Length: 150
Image 1 (spheres, one colour):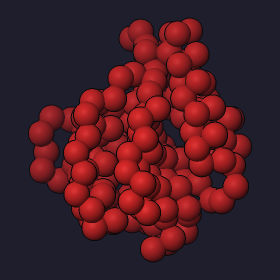
Image 2 (cartoon, rainbow, N blue to C red):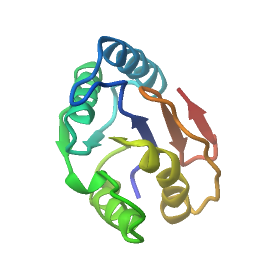
Image 3 (tube, helix red, strand yellow):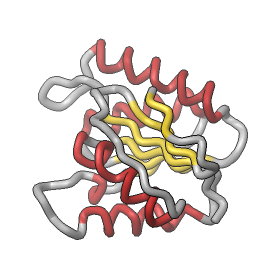
């Protein structure tokens, strides 16, 4: 497996469909923190859900990280479907051998719960995570460095 770290970012603050100016600002600050931690060297897969304000969040990160992003409808969890994590892991697994860093921009449930699932299945580690506020994120490192909250 090539992937060395997973970054999850919860979308920025928003109104009905779009990021607010504060949401854009916080996502930009988080993107700068991600850049400081992972740099722009190495390969990155930036993935996001299809909801407009999540795509806007990913666009800001993509500009800062100088990388394209792809939209995946199944990165939006609707209700308590048991296969949500399996679907997400399926998307992520398509990138594990190809990139150094996987960044997922999504919603509260995925950003809070998926890192633990990923750590167990990809890094063979057990971790606990706490909620991530809007516009912020977490970096999970394969090498045992733990979690870095942004």
